[in-house]
Image 1: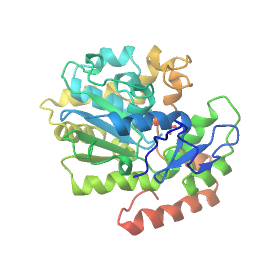
Image 2: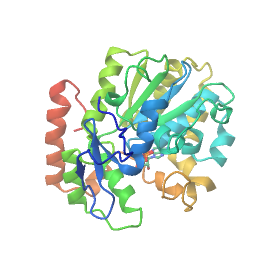
Image 3: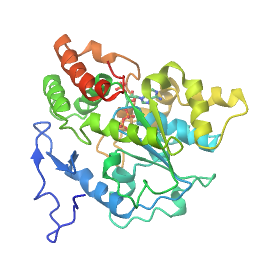
Image 4: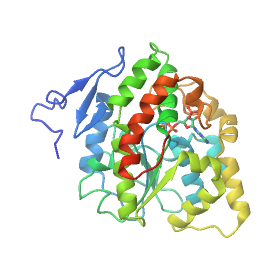
Length: 313
Ligand code: PAP
């Protein structure tokens, strides 16, 4: 495993560099995956210093695959009566990202009580690919991991809208498709990211639960019950499940002032409301040409279907 530490402290000088979006900072390739410089430092800190507790729950995902939704669900499942918390806190503040929030600054101490909720179960999120974690991190810990993935075309479509909304120059969809297919997007390649966690979920199903955005959409109640069982906090009242499904729905979350706010968050230079858009299935069809869809499907066939994972087309 390649290390990021260098004597000069210039962590990117030896890493391959690519432009993924003309006006934005480049991405750097580190152990097969691409990162923005502003994320790389946090990633490095997490990989070197994060020591999970056996009781921790880690929400892992590729960007734009349903992280915000699953944050609200996991927080609610673990803490049960969480409606009030969801009204006044953005899901990304209830479940902080290891590399984008907690380890962005050096010398973070994740044992502080500040991030330990009443149940004592800490929930963190990460976009770091499973392949990058060493044996002394989340791999060997007893902690549980819930990974969410989403159809590649909807993932890219959501990512493209998110980037375009950032208010700087637009990211032409043709370029976005090109970069996504080449794997050159932050935390990409998407396909390797998904397959890394999927493999671990097949080998260690007690440790890693693999969830899809589509299943979560089509049968949210069953998915919530399954999450409760996996996390060791099953439901005995149907009403509790229904309440959680409702309070975490995009329609409900979008109504809260904190989630409507156009103020910039403290952890990323984007408004709070940019994490909630349409929240449906198949929206890529409204934006991508038949040729773009065909191109992504061909890669999905090769990377997913040919490895036995029939998903995403
Ligand atoms: P992140 O990786 O930056 O945290 P993430 O939350 O994974 O983003 O993805 C955002 C997508 O989830 C958006 O999808 P869209 O662009 O296709 O609409 C967003 O609308 C959707 N989303 C956010 N909250 C919910 C929710 N409660 N239910 C369903 N989808 C949601």
